[in-house]
Image (tube, rainbow over all chains, first blue to last red; front, side, top):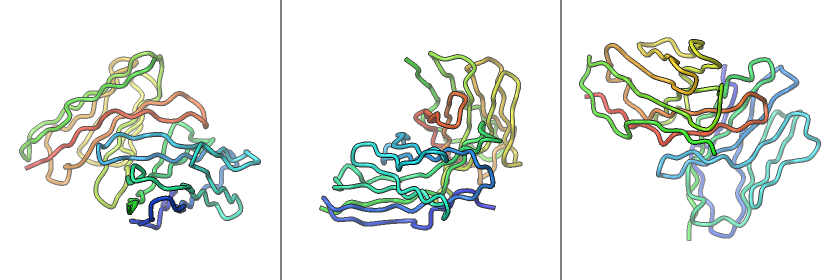
Length: 115
Length: 113
């Protein structure tokens, strides 16, 4: 079964607007970590933000924030004030406590920021 | 500081030929090491991971194999490539722990012809 699901293959957003990229996960482990990565067209993977399952507050890093809804098992990435440079592939990933050596990724969402 | 090196950047290989992709990490010890394949519409597929020398866990049964002959060296191999092995291969490392991010190499674009 898919552990990480990203249902949006592609998204468009107007420059300077906010956009939400969806991520749902499946685990019975109470301890886990959720990550978001950005992959520009160059192929490099850039770490953006982390949320722990026991974190009380939603993670934020600059223009990135994570809308963590534990009961719904969702960890959506919110990018505020989109910039042209935000156009990229975005991946959600998870590590579970019992199998923390494994790093599982979703299928990704391709974001295009329009001028 | 830690760095990860992955080579080659691009590779074109005929069907049935062998494969060897190498990844090395500098500036850390006993890292977790990973091999991923990225194909269109399938995201990053975890192929192998390793928590120590000689310890390899396979996620996807296929004609690929991995080895970790040294602490900071991770090798992806195949004896006979298939057309379906084409893709973008990424090596990554992380420290142990739930909250530690992964650091990726620059990737290898493999085309099997």
